[in-house]
Length: 99
Image (tube, rainbow, N blue to C red; front, side, top):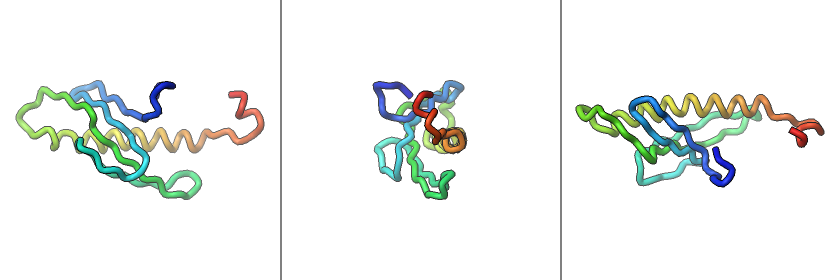
């Protein structure tokens, strides 16, 4: 996350390398993507789309799409854990504004 960029990204640096955009809602993109749903800490259902905006591999034997989907699933597990962590660590008292 960067202050000037409102997007959320998972950057996978190990082979295969990928930049995966995390988009709130179920959105159709022109890149390889997959939809995910989970229940947040307040019991509300959240919908997300993970989309591989950049993908590089040296494995040219298998089709890139067959490599991207498992990578999106791994990125989702990491991103979902991040969302759960954020839900569990929201400060709601008066000192939260000072942090």
